[in-house]
Length: 483
Ligand SMILES: [Zn+2]
Image 1 (cartoon, rainbow, N blue to C red):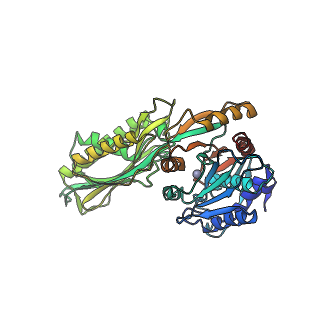
Image 2 (cartoon, helix red, strand yellow):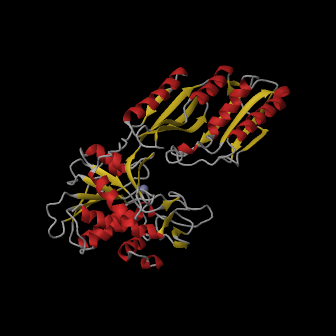
Image 3 (cartoon, rainbow, N blue to C red):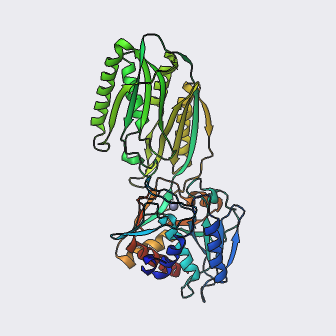
């Protein structure tokens, strides 16, 4: 036990303190699942484990509330394991080390797992406290939310009895979330042809680094630079004035991260080399000015490239630039119904070039199914112009806001009455399990809320301690009010 167990409400923080010692990276939920089951057994609560590994615990209504409509509490068991490069830490065995950071709790050099560990601890607290007033409760603990929403995807459509669900996986205090985006990836491969590096040419390597990147859903409206798009734009501009051939180009990494760095190697007649470098530097300087507010650390370098055996021929070189420039990236549409909500976006997430194909990874999101179809059609259309082949993942569904929800009405009024603050009601442009669960259970009324958690999925992850008490207090009062 650590100092975390002394925070209020103690019943919740003691569970969180214990969870800190249980390894639970995505796809490694065995130990935490066994722990959940042990708490259910200790309190004589019925539970079911489904084939994929989700757990549902059931708790009967408190006396006098047997006829109330059932409520489902939901959180995911897994966490993102990330650590700073200079930290020795074994996520399979070591306990996370909590660290006080002013008003916040964080972990020493690693993710904290407050996402979604606080939600899990809150559910365990409700499960084990027999002094509470509530209707019939179900506790749904899902697996592998972070790397594929697998638990929600594989959830049986007959496992849950209730039709009201409180998801405890959003991360902003004083807000109630009523919608999320669906998403899906598209992989595009485009054939190219190469030729030997022409005589009398020199290779140059261009490097664009220092961009901020960020989450392709939550941060897309910030309009940060996409390193791949900017590098392609500069090369395209130069290609209109002079002839060169691309030998290599690469950038981006994860599907949900905006590319921070991009590289290209080109070959050009040796006599024209300095001219191209000067033009590229000019183009990049113009873009650096355009983006200076959001990308103050943009860095562009040109160096003599490594000699390459084969380069794209003239046609493939130009096609690659046309393709990279025409592929969409960023916000595609804003919501007409919810102010400031991005409805549809796409992330030009990754580009690589090998011997005979260009590979591009696109990651698209929308809170409405037709928006998702529309952006995917646009990707098809551009790929079609260059004989690209497409491989699409199944899109997971979004969660369309229901402004007439009973849960929303009750919880908004309660929040305002209890805290004196009218909660912000909104939707997020990222995935939540609610979209998938809602698609399996007709008429499921859902709300998502949680304490203030910042920088999730990074070693800077931290939770604002006093917001956990507010969050838990609201959860208990809501259960009572809805009973
Ligand atoms: Zn989460």
